Length: 127
Image (tube, rainbow, N blue to C red; front, top):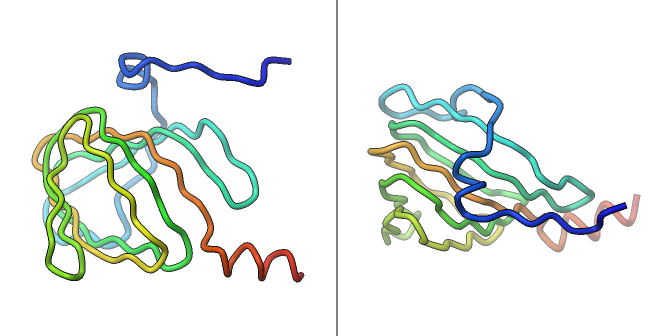
């Protein structure tokens, strides 16, 4: 059994994705998403995600996310008004509780790691 998976940036940019519909809170345009989950286990998910141009609100109430953008362009405006420019190579860390707005001008593809908030992990362990 192989316990490692090795992906080049080019392989991740070319990876086939499954359509997953539209973001939950579309504000403008007709953004569509697609995804390929690489790892899914309790409290952790790693994958590749893509969204076409448009604008949508997003929130991470019970999970955080680390993402590295492979392609595309746009901006993410955080609740405090600060703005992150989306471009290939950009790395962004969102803490649990984050909210903001995505404005995508060219289809964006990213590698992501979603992790449960520490409280969520503790509560799940108590069950």
